[in-house]
Length: 314
Image 1 (cartoon, rainbow, N blue to C red):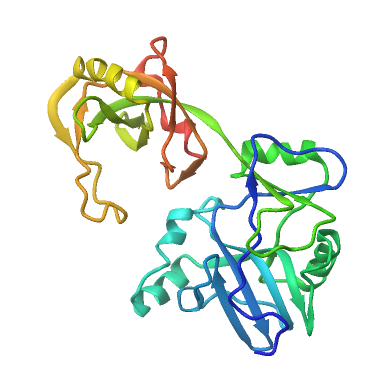
Image 2: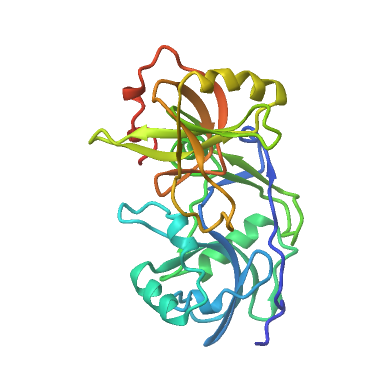
């Protein structure tokens, strides 16, 4: 390749904020639930790079790009049958066996959503303001690459905090700063769920509760394990122990094998389905809470049967 920028390039990153920034000079994009990636295209050649600089080429052979010579920043996503981003399906694409990679490329094809351009032809665009890079990006991107939606209206952007994974806010006058958290802000979508406590895990010290296992009822009356809430203070972990002891069945349960457990014991103490708690979450994928949930309060006023999966299923 003979491009003005060479891999690896660290993508520009975003600081986390609690609310949307407003005022002049901000543009907004929906936050996606995929793999950040930078692509280098030079005629018929392409190199797909992960956020940490590793090659993704062998895992996503089906992803194609418009002809030309350019470098794009964007996100790889896989969509489920309802057209929602499927992060678990995307994770399955990272597999060592070529035969499985080829099968998944056909069964769950990924697409590239572009949200910035870093170089075009023989020119690096890193020093241009974001507004100018956006104009260049709109001129380059075409099928099969998707262009990220963008708005300068904070009220419109606020709707993404209810329907998408969150919002990325960008300063329109800023250059692209590889690896830095300047000029970009990330606001995650947050929401609350009312869940049935179906189990608990003990702290390693044995003096309290490490996590509460959460479940939701499906339309057929079955309980679905959807995640856990943890991160309790030592005091609250001790206070939880008599609460869960009062409803423990003396049995153990297992949520099923996890590709991330690396052999760790994941069994937990089962309880009668009597406790309901409200938790705050950010991410949902495949009908499960990702990254854990934050305990908010007990819901003694809500029957367990009313804690249903329609809260989490889009």
